[in-house]
Length: 338
Ligand code: DAH
Image (tube, rainbow, N blue to C red; front, side, top):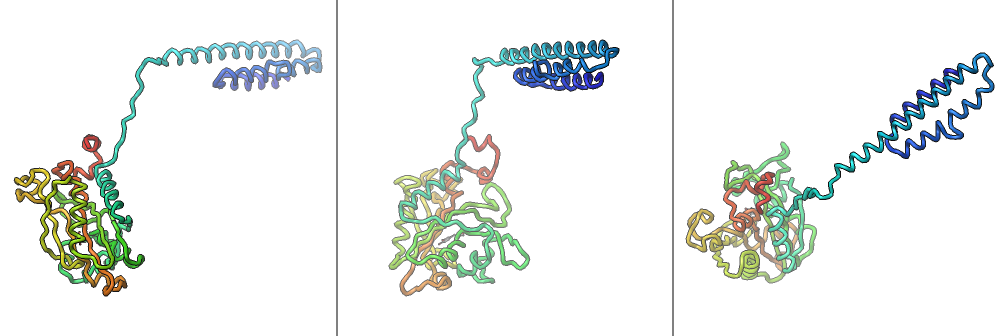
């Protein structure tokens, strides 16, 4: 019985010292010292102990009871004290820490605007893979294997067989959409593109582009000009002035370069427009019949136009960013300025 008393005392001490709040302590007090507690049940057993041992066992039991009682009282004091100490430190008058408010990245802001403008014109948004096949990035766009225009789009190859690449242009979405959708349709395909470029202030290995294309009956070059004019005025204001020049892209005929009077210097010449007074802003053209035919579209009935918006370029003009790398930095000191 001596041993049993010592064990219960030790168990009680360990549990009481570990109590984390007052209610837990109260429960322990009941378990050990309450009317039906463990100490009382030992006291009840005392009468069965042989008479010559009973005195000694009684003393041990009493001591155990006193020890547990004292420990409960001490622990109670300690818990109350730590509670009030915590309260003393809780000063309601100290101003809180204000969480910083986040905001969209400038590329996201402009992309949302562009999407809204085109949604109003009835365009649907199409999303496609950044790892693209050579077929959709080049072949389906009338750019066969040895075509010289591949040299202007220095390509990252993903596999040895040169079948998968990081897409160099969101125009790659033309073939994907055309094989799945029946004309007429108007589609906008925004996304990231990659080219193997030496990185500096005006060149990056990744850039954002928004490809747009329309396939319908009786589409004319003037429909394309009207669309570009409307969109750029929405983005840059009604005094936008445009100039179109012919150019060559294998997937359009004729191909068109759009120049916008520099919105930064108003045409006088500055570092953004390389002193020409004009910024090259939207390459475009009438979709080449080969592209439509490859996608299985009947060119006797359907034709269309396509264009690309250099999103990074629009952001640069809008926020007058001189170094392209600003748009890909994770540095909050820079990003929080927009
Ligand atoms: N994909 C071309 C590039 O990144 C840009 C382009 C030119 C897209 C003419 C078009 C277009 O849709 O009609 O260089």
